[in-house]
Amino acid sequence: MTLRRIAKRLLVNGEEHEVSFLPHRTLLEVLREDMALTGTKHGCELGECGTCTVLLDGEPVLSCLVLARECEGREIETVEGLAGASGPHPLQHRFAELNAAQCGYCTPGMLMTAMSVLRKTPAPDRETLRRELAGNLCRCTGYLKIYEAIEMAAEDLQDG
Amino acid sequence: MMRLPTFAYNAPADAAEITRILHEEGPAAQVVAGGTDLFPNMKRRQVEPETVVSLYRATALRGIEWDTDGSLRIGPTETLRALERDARLKEDFPALHAAIVSISTPLLRSTGTLGGNLCLDTRCQYLNQNYEWRRAINHCLKCTGDTCWTAPGGTKCWAVNSSDSVPVMIAMGAKLVLQSTEGEREVDAEDFYDIEDGRDWLKKRPDELLTGIRIPKQNGSRSTYMKLRRRDAFDFPVLGVAATLETDGDVITEAKIVLNSVGPAPVRCTEAEQSLIGKKLTDEAIEEAKDLSRKGAKPLDNTDYLPNYRKKMVPVFVKRALLSLR
Picture 1 (tube, one colour):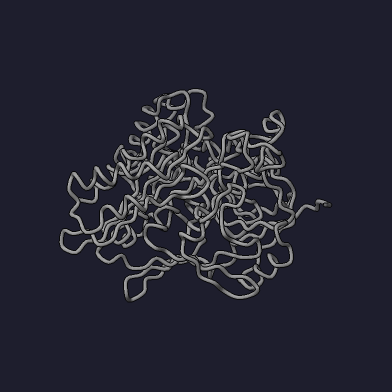
Picture 2: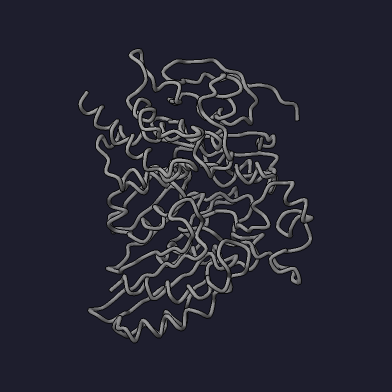
């Protein structure tokens, strides 16, 4: 089969990009390899680890299992879009402050899932966090610092 | 890197065009909805379809619709996440809700669909490995090899039906609608999985498309789903038990107990079901049903936990399920 690249308009972090990529590429591959957005991490590639999590129309999904070509016209958010003009997002700030990232490989996925949780549930209880973050594996922290960082960020966001 | 193999891609908006492609391509085509089952299997080169037919533009295959009589129709490409958030589904069909919430993780439920879970490919520790691993054992019966490493003396594939929603659908008497270029047919969920071999895990022809899921109103029945697995997230079931009971006053008039993930096909515990009819759900009745439930399950050593332990857990989970229906 001859492989011809296809051109699609992808809306990533509020910015529209015209990107050409191989037709069978996943969103993860296109973000990292065709758009140089390497914040989203490349883990198991099979849906078993969660480090490639991005938001697609606000829902956290595994970018390793989504065809990039099916993302045209949808809103894609990656970890690169979290920080604003005024600096890191409160989630990023609290993750850094609490050492909620150790090796850091799961962190982009954790942040994106956490972001989606906080949008739906501004003050999540611990059980909600455990349930919603169940798809993001961390092999360093034991999760406690991650939950605490998200809870503190939730308070920061509510205080404005 | 585990990349997808190449494939021709189609994403028609209507079901007629999808079935036309399936009719033309036959087994060379694979349907994909959420991709959470097919894409990992393709990355591991367990399946390499020439054509992938995506359902993502076929919006008519989505949706949750309640009939006035309280029965439910679900479009097969409705995501598990959307179903999980449906308050009425949780209220009226608690066993289905419990099964859906237990599937994998929120991230996979965001894209994974109910139709996908109902058609989930069977799984086995000798199969769900990367290509190099499988080549090292000279492959297996389900995928280009000539030996089933789970039961090497036989000619049958023992890959396990690992769906959480399948036993619940059978226990609820659900019907599945299949469409092809020849028209539409409706099958009982129970018959859809009446198979012997893990290579042919659905009674569905390659040219047929699952277009609807119909669940009858549960006449005041109580239902539950319980699942054995190592971790409380991610893991597929290594034993699933769905149970429904209909009662007249205290007396049981109908009972269904369905096991899954103990073999290539779900298993109905018909003797245990029969033993409950006409009785109240007393300790003695539960003990009798529990003992009778041991018979159908033949878990083998091809998934997590030892088969003996899983077999021992069958009556334990049946008892727990019945106790929860009191």
